[in-house]
Length: 370
Length: 156
Ligand SMILES: [Zn+2]
Ligand SMILES: [Zn+2]
Image (cartoon, rainbow over the protein chains, first blue to last red):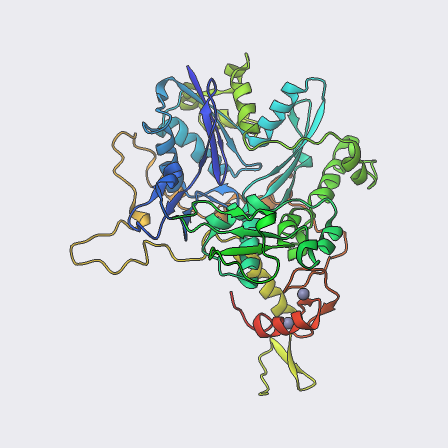
């Protein structure tokens, strides 16, 4: 029996068989200005020659799966003959869902996976749990880890001890990739060029130029310098989708510090936006979201744990200094799912279709730690 | 300047309007809601010219294809559940009555750090507050830009 691992994110799906490699695919549908009657699904995005003004149709809302019509279109495409050619009668699936997923969404998930697609067995889990599994697997001496998972819709801080999720310690900050991109769009539109309709393009700008500042106020000073002194400043060449297929930063030596470019490309000048936008993860209150940022929420999470009760706020400095901090790639959870599928106890962790047909949702509720 | 008694604004020293706290809060809420949006433009499909008498547009909500190879699922109740938005589902979960931890209890509480003011025009640290709307600014130039663009208007 094959096992398909699907880390079903609100923006991208990370999918592949446990014996093969992972693919990262948009978990949504698109419509474009140039072919308005057609709806493009998942990686059909690559067929759109001019993705300016791309319109997104997403299955998730605020991080939870609500638009099943869209999700099923994407899954039909992923599972179908164009992509993974799933033989449902002989396939098990590992699939992720958000922390504190709603009961009705979990039940819909069970029904769709077992009754509509007819997978032979299912394992529902959280992406962070797969990451923790991956981490403990490669670091067998470690007893605890803290997963900080920034997704499309929000960020979760989740302690794991001896492979167990510590539910009481979970903290959610309502800042994620979508908010950062929208905020970047908003300030660029206000300060220089109207880009509110260009989520796809500005998302790429964010990935290409934004960074987490290690010295926030120092970088603010540098960003205020004039001309070449300003080491933070970048000029970003926007794609026109004919000569320039993908945006890029002007090389430093080609930058024009005073006056206009004569090359005629469309340029965005990014200065404090580069680090002020990601800063929202650390200080959501900067834009008026009354929630702790990541460092404070980590302390809050740890202090809620039985062993963490007596720790003081000094912990926030210690975290930066001596904890082992691993920045993990987007496919880390998927790799954790792959390891799980190869675990000799895998069969014990799943719910089979027979099981579900006989006992319904309650057997899933008992078995899955979600 | 014409005096407007709208409850949302009062006139200070016969000069500029001053937005009250409730209005400021509404503006902030609207800004934060905008940051949640998936699209700011119209759906390209809906902006097509009206179809001719025989043409039929596959409107998105009608894209359900006949489910040939699918087994029939559990009827109306099932179908309906697939069409609820986030707030409806959240309400249905009735979490305030449920045991913690849950979705509601897990949200990070407000920060205990002091707020960091940034100029709403240029984004650099700011020392001044606009008396009209409470927005922050860093210098006269930014204040003037702010008054012309955002202060009492919505450009976006
Ligand atoms: Zn300013
Ligand atoms: Zn103002």
